[in-house]
Length: 169
Ligand code: SME
Image (cartoon, rainbow, N blue to C red; front, side, top):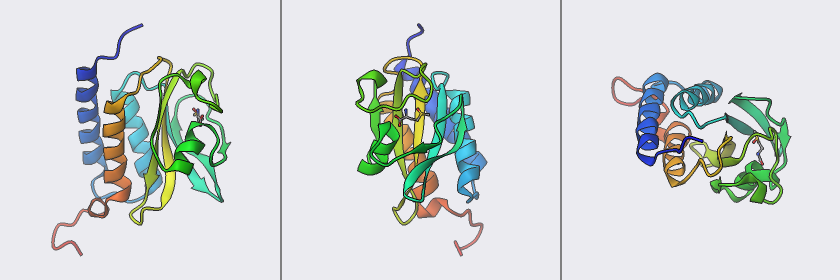
């Protein structure tokens, strides 16, 4: 199995984030942004097997835009890696999904996972971002750093919401 080289990973993230920033400049619709982010991450990071968002809806998580094999439709807060990230409002890095109590296996080929909470400009939880890999321990603090930065830039930071040519109004 090919090893994921740290320096290559950093280069791939920098390229992905640059492309995403360029494509999403001035865009506001969250589904448009989520779909584009999934596509460009999966294109640039070959160890991403499944990438997608679960949306906060009526007190639970429901599957939103994703790329990969069939995702579970509903996840309760506190359940699985996604529900844990939503409940704790904290990124979950899971090097081996079999060792995470209550992990939900939507596809048994997934071996490791990262889930990052997504907040809007009012710091309300609106979704979680989930990436799965068929490789063990595919995700580490590099993924955490770049994914948190990306999601913060595009969903939480107010300044990113609009592209203004003049005074910002
Ligand atoms: N493994 C996740 C469920 C979502 S899928 O991986 C697409 C979890 O335990 O929450």
